Length: 257
Image (cartoon, rainbow, N blue to C red; front, side):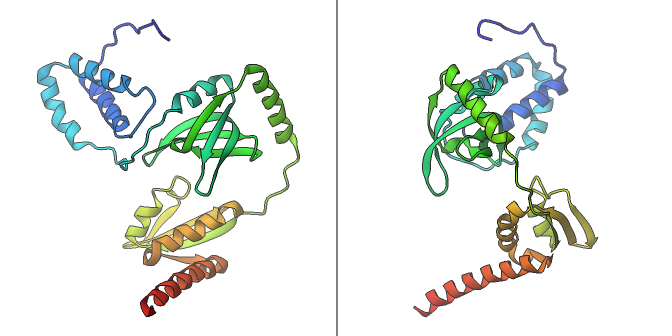
């Protein structure tokens, strides 16, 4: 809170190095919450470490790295999203998706960073479900009065209380991966731990794919190219082959012209 400070905190050298390493990772994002405070905190931590100890841990810190892709964006509305979460508040946001932009009523529930971007999980009144939004694609934000927020909460509760039609059962997917394919797949938070090595430089991935993620599976394994071969289901093999044939025809056409 504004005007309050924590009492002195005693850190041993390893604890201080751990904090510096964490702050270094945060500083690699193009923009973050508490943007200025991360630098003042880093300077304060460095100031409390004796010079002789800093000279020993500094080479170690230089060898530790967070792999975060370089991005170019600013997040002028990140603080507004964070402020909503504790109070279950609502915002009206102008959001630019991959295909269009429109105004949405959202109730943010979580903000997190991944692959160099910041994301916000929020209930969307227009989508009638929980959705994931990239924070840098939020163009404009309008606040909602408390009485209007209460009305939106009631409306959302009514929507969520409606019976949900039963989903189709998930589909078993089995894929064989090369070493490079395994490296790509293990970065995915949902399937990254579902691989076993079945031979030198050969891994098998087996997972249940929800029907709603089918298009993702087609795109993902098509993108891996020769580094992956889908074993089953046959429908997934067929759709990947169709993608490859379409791309082949496009390049053949450009060669002839």
